[in-house]
Image (cartoon, chains in turn cyan, orange):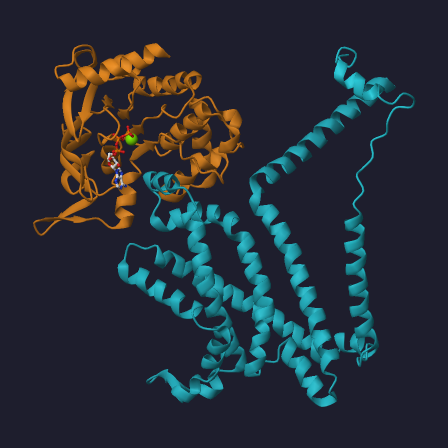
Length: 313
Length: 261
Ligand SMILES: Nc1ncnc2c1ncn2[C@@H]1O[C@H](COP(=O)(O)OP(=O)(O)OP(=O)(O)O)[C@@H](O)[C@H]1O
Ligand SMILES: [Mg+2]
């Protein structure tokens, strides 16, 4: 080989006669020092909490207590429903925002501006206190209800969180739609598809992979944001934890209990997001390769069998 | 049907803002005729095609395809724009093939071809698949039915795009520079499919810079420049013996480019 011809490399190797030189990674003392410092600090933190005035023994008990589980279920429910409401609103307003009709576009802009520009907490309080403005609502002659009975904490939380989320998703979905090549719309329309069919069958399916990671992040955010519904008395996870510590004064313990379940929910959502992205991102390739694999497995089995048959004969 | 040509474009005008792109274009195309449109970049060829199937609304002028006024209906002495649904219905009879193919990347080759028959014509999936496979065989790609566009070469993609247009059994197909985005060695396979189509009697309006194709296949060649039709005639007249300096210069330049390659 050319090592023999390459004089310089031979020089390098032969500068130290004897055994061939071993390749060794460079040492990084700073790497170890910083790691140890961080571990020590972390240990101090854990030690502090372990020795502090916290009764860790009751935490597992409350994690599985009925009130907390019930609250966790309600957190999941309100987060899921608000996210669905947000997605529906976001899709509608994104399409409106991109419409040629200036009124539609302006209304969609106004929606985003108003609901992104004010804190969710304030929006929740406004929905919840709506009865102060409209003591009763209804359609004359058809039905009539006291607003206080109609606007329950659940409904106020759903409207507050869902409509707020819709404003963010409007912008996200709009970006996704705009990211699809305009030639796709031309081709769809040129083949006789209506605007609605073009949107549903051509544009949105292609916008989906682009916006899915962001929507996943929004869903995780929603799980946490739903804790704000505690202020209007909706018995979700945080409010449930509070209801217990108001009685037994185990504030920190119960906040950790709530955090435990929030972590479970957000972790599971992250994992789901990962698989969903993988599915949408390469759905075509994966579906095909799966079919391919099955087909190939079948074919190769047949081949093996025939080979065996041949050898046994 | 009347004796009128299949496609009649009359005094078509279209501006984008201050930019007057079409300045009174008239054109006609008989059934089974192949019209090739040539002209420099920016002369309005794509805009003309987009107006024919109403992807762009013209500012004035009329377009009639198979005795149907495209995009408008006469009402109380005016021409009133049609509803989205009615325009969509008219487009089903007019196929279109794009320079950059514009296949639907999230669908398989077969689904690309059958989507419009199913959605726009309401044909059942099985029947649509049958039609789709027939069209794919006619462009020599029935073995790629389950592929995705990105797995195909440019020439194959364009042939799928032609099959997609054919699956709607259009009365007329518009081609917008169908070979301009292709590597030179892939141009031939697409032109061959188009030649076959012309021989089978398909009515085609083809914007192209392939002079040989225009000379051999076209019945009529139209030279456009700066938003107007400058010359129109039989291929030999326009391509070999152009009357205007503009056409002569343009064609000479195209021929020169071809030789350089
Ligand atoms: N949607 C649009 N909005 C604004 N201007 C446009 C639009 N489409 C085309 N134009 C302009 O119209 C003019 C003619 O464009 P057109 O695409 O019809 O030319 P062309 O003859 O097809 O050129 P090419 O050979 O480059 O494709 C160009 O100046 C272009 O910038
Ligand atoms: Mg063009």
